[in-house]
Image (cartoon, rainbow, N blue to C red; front, side):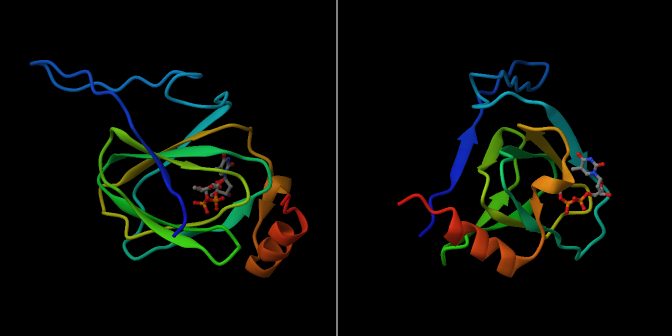
Length: 138
Ligand code: T46
C-alpha cells in the first residue's frame, strides 16, 4: 500500500466561525511560489493525467469534495478523499495524479513549490513509468 501524506491543519475556531492559517516552513514544507484553484468543475470530469519532474504540491479542497488518484509508477496507487478545508494532501514530484468525483460546489486549491512550467509535466503514462525507472535511486 502506498504511503499517503495528508496534513490535518490546526483549526482556529471561535463563536464567529473557523479559520485555518498556513505558513511556509510550518504547515507547508516548501516555499510556496504559486497558488491556483479550480472550481465549477463539470460533473463527471476527471482531470490531471500527468506527473511532475520537480513540482511538490499541497491540495486542499476548501469547499465541497473531490477524490485524488495517485500512482507512483512502481505499481502502487492510492485513492484519497478530500472533503474538509482543514486537510491537505501532499503530492511529491514523480507522482501521477488524477482528480475526479468533484462535487458541483468543489473548490480545489493547490499550493505549489514552483512557478508554472510546462516542461515540468510528464503527460504520457508510459513515459512517466519509464522516467521513474530511469531516475530510481535505490
Ligand atoms: C496539477 C493538478 C493538481 C496556468 O496557466 N497556470 C497554472 O499555474 C496552471 C496550474 C494551469 N494553467 C493553465 C494551463 C491550462 O491551459 O490552465 C489550464 C488548465 O491546466 P491543466 O490542464 O494543467 O489543469 P489540471 O487540472 O489537469 O492540472 C492542474 C495542474 O496543472 C497540475 O500541476 O498537479 O492541477
